[in-house]
View 1: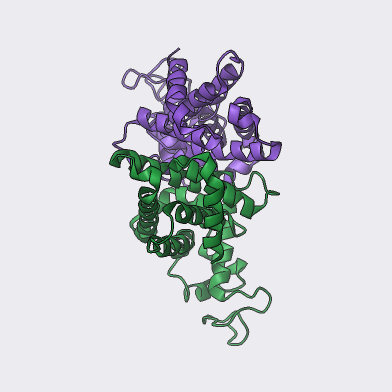
View 2: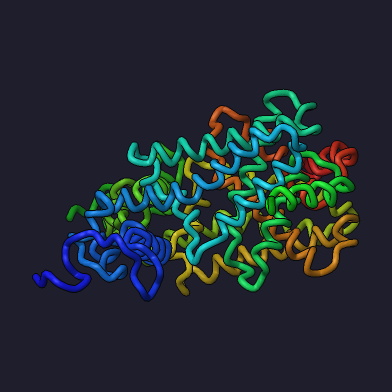
Amino acid sequence: MTTTGRRVGRPRATARAESGLTAREELLAAAGQLFTTRGYTATTTRAIAERAGMRQASMYHYFGGKEDVLAALLEGTVRPSLDLALALAARDDLPAEARLWALCRADVALLCGGPHNLGALYLLPEVRAERFADFRAVRDELKAAYAGLLAATAAGAELPEDELALRADLVFGLIEGVILIRREAPDRDPADFASATADAALRVAGCAEHVLPKLRREGEALHAG
Amino acid sequence: MTTTGRRVGRPRATARAESGLTAREELLAAAGQLFTTRGYTATTTRAIAERAGMRQASMYHYFGGKEDVLAALLEGTVRPSLDLALALAARDDLPAEARLWALCRADVALLCGGPHNLGALYLLPEVRAERFADFRAVRDELKAAYAGLLAATAAGAELPEDELALRADLVFGLIEGVILIRREAPDRDPADFASATADAALRVAGCAEHVLPKLRREGEALHAG
């Protein structure tokens, strides 16, 4: 084994010049591509490392194995939305409807962003395993944050508890449902799609059609701010 | 090899006494269970045959291979809804809103029915292959039928063409999105959930809240009739 060049079994702390990604990010990008095109089961840690331009042994400096890579990819699809949801939950000086709109829009943009449809990995049977409890917990927290914002809307405040839980499931299902439709209209503008999905979520939440334009403006301001 | 008993390499035309299923149905049930719990890649035709109580060779009387079994499972998740959608499209004596409601409700009941979440298989990378073109064509026809009913609603008729296509995607995404939420509230009544999702779909379609109870009654009558 050579001890010079980028194929040594040591972590690289700096970004590769050609992609601007760190070694860890390159491994995640490689795994995201392989898991969503070849399949999780069919992908080896060796194939991930090779696609990222490093040896299999080097990969183990960053991840404990294939499950760790999958866990990191999955958490990346929910953690940023949870962080936003918690920040929005604290802003009770703002209308709940506009905060819900802003969360929906950002969540759709995250789920539809990036080159690979990582949300498709949610439905892998492997994700039920104990190793992915953290991902499931973050996703549950995110869903609870949606329910909390929904409960604070004018329409949500009037719903009985079981109906509110059902409505929160449907809003969350609509947002995650973009996983199933994201690649069917590739020339659609992603930002427009995210805004339209956020509008639809507020319709499901029970907001009247005539208040949507105002909520959208408020939500967009929140997004920009 | 014995030439008597149920393990011979010949098709069984009659149902097995214990389950009431035909051999083909037993193979589909076995494959549905294995594909959604162990994963498609990890499941062999031998494992499917064994779980269905027959030899691997017997399985090939019913299916050409694992891909054929997957294709049959996938088509079973869209064909009944397409048949209903085409029947509903022809009933232009009835309000489009009520027909859309009835389609949504039946589609959710189909996607949430049965012991296994077969819709989870939609996101397998393998489903992009030529072998599954029939499934994708049926799903596209179903989506077009949704768009047709949506265009015939009072709210849909007022939308410009691109907005209508987007709205149809969102309604279809909400319905298929039940794949992502079906198992999280197992004690929820499936019929109530299907009706609530159909209500939500009409909200996304732009129906005003105050007309929903009437549409729901009309849709339910259509469902029963």
